[in-house]
Amino acid sequence: MLRKTFETFVQALGRPLVSFIINLGYFTQFVAKSVYNCFIPPFYLKLFGKQFLDIGFYSLPVVGLTTLFAGMVIAIQTYSGISEYGAEGVVASVVLISVTRELAPVLSALMVAGRIGAAMAAEIGTMRVTEQIDALITLSANPFRYLIAPRIWAAIIVMPLLVLFGDVIGIFGGYLVGVYKLDFNPANYINNTADNLQAIDIIMGVVKAAVFGFVVAVMGCYHGYRSKGGAQGVGEATTNSVVTSSILILIFNYLITELFFAR
Amino acid sequence: MSDNKIEIRNLYKAFGKKKVLDGVDLDVKNGESLVVIGGSGTGKSVLIKCIQGLLTPDAGSIKIDDEEVIGTSKNIHEKMGMLFQGAALFDSLSVWENVAFVLLENNRMPRKDARLEAIRVLRQVGLAPEVADLSPAELSGGMQKRVGLARAIMNKPEIIFFDEPTTGLDPIMADVINDLIIESAKGLGATTLTITHDMASARKIADRIAMLYKGKIIWVGSVKDMDKSDNPYLKQFISGSSQGPIQMEV
Image (cartoon, rainbow over all chains, first blue to last red; front, side):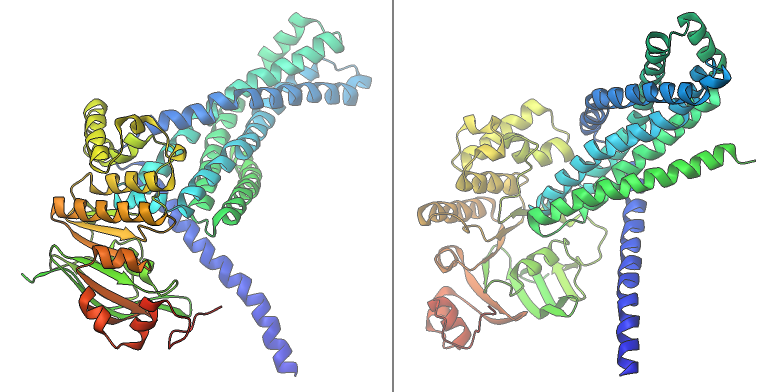
């Protein structure tokens, strides 16, 4: 009796662990294959251009709105937290640092994960369950080069551009609140922002953006590529893609920050 | 060089504990039309996917033109074409881009020339040039199969695979597709391997028929031999009776 309970307990622990290790193996193999095929011709420039537009241009409104309000709320929070010490001038620099180092890259990436990562998983997942990926192989096209490499390249290149756009809009949001709500002097606000602007903050944001772009594209493609079982499988792939890429974005955000400021 | 275009020996494939192919031996002769029949879940699709390298068998040998294809680094797909069960047309591309996919992406043919070539092949399968610019989602099931066939024969393959070519079609459209399969294969002088459970289709297009049951080829012969055979499994399958040695898992 005791032995049977112990066996059941070990099995209950072991099964998810074995399944996790198997999936980790598949994932590592997938990432290695994807990265390798990113550098092997043929390069599908037209498909890259389409992804570039989808990820970049069509994400501008959502990234703009997110960073605008993030910049505005940081201005109010900073002011309400420190106004009693008479340090209104600090608002501009706090907005600048928060937006460029953290808010623009992280919020933009989370938005893109929801918008683009999910779409990638759904599109590739549908291609998988309707045998379109098999059809690609029978037509002598490598699905890693045709489907995955253009998405990864586009995401890595366009995410930093989106974040630079988000930086500008986020800082502008702080400016709007500072000048029109908190009655700061516009020239002083701009001067404070310019004085505190440091290349390292922008570079860190851009590096984070490139890594997040890679994470979103790889997770979207991976879950789509491995989806099975029809509409339900595609739905699960979409959800898993958004959840895993969001978690990885937050983990990598910490790791990159740690790397930049490690002493 | 042997007379066989495809030679399969002792092919095994399992998914977990489920044995799907359990020692398949099968030859497809040069230029012949072989049809593999069998019930749902007997491993027909797995067999065809193993031959094309879409699945890796657990053991066994598959030779095409006397060359082993399992684990080969050569591009074996250049000499093959495939009509998928659901046509598997790329829905992000127009009809003509689907048909001319190989010309556009592999041969880098100019788009104008590739479009003309695609329209020529679409005509061969009985589709009007106006269809060329439509999206696959705008086509009926029968038209999608024709486009799938056009895509499969575009590269003038030596071997064409047909996966349930008439499934989901009305009997008349199914017969039209059968005729197109025969014409296309004869026109190209291609070897064809079809998997189906549609006996009308099998009778029409087959030179020889093989029956797959529980992962093994249990009978091979011509259509004439099939009607005379006293193999109880084959007799039950062609008569479509629920009574007999084949028990369906329900």
